[in-house]
Length: 171
Image (cartoon, rainbow, N blue to C red; front, side):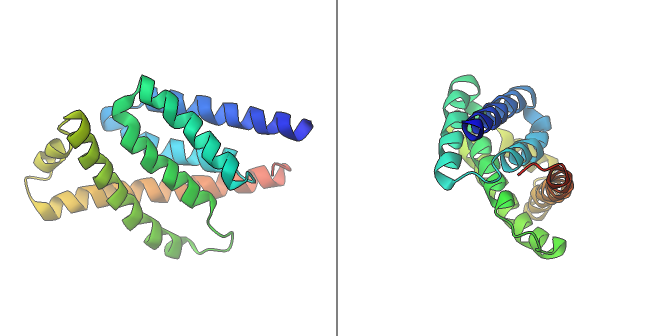
């Protein structure tokens, strides 16, 4: 009974924090979601079975469709990042992990931008294109830099918080 209560509490906390984050941080601040949402998901779902993780993911995605439909593709990317982060082995080196995580994150950010523009007729990718001076190399550099910052901060925070939680007996 106690384990079920802990599971319910952690799931509700994850759901609430993720939905709050995607509601508050939009537009240019969406990069904060790229750090907070995967961090929340990965820390609060440690030790859950894959089936329960899928249930929590659906519990996050369905209300997000109602409240913030434009954030849907980004939210899916962030959820995948959180799953990937929590699946990293403990002894994995920082550089190796970052080398694997950054290209995945950059490609995911680009696909989320493209899909959001396509489905919701936003102009996010066009704005980034102009910021990059209408240069393909600079656009890749801008998205890559965002992915590097999000991945590095995410890894740093995840490992630090996870180590502290482990010392306190949190599984």
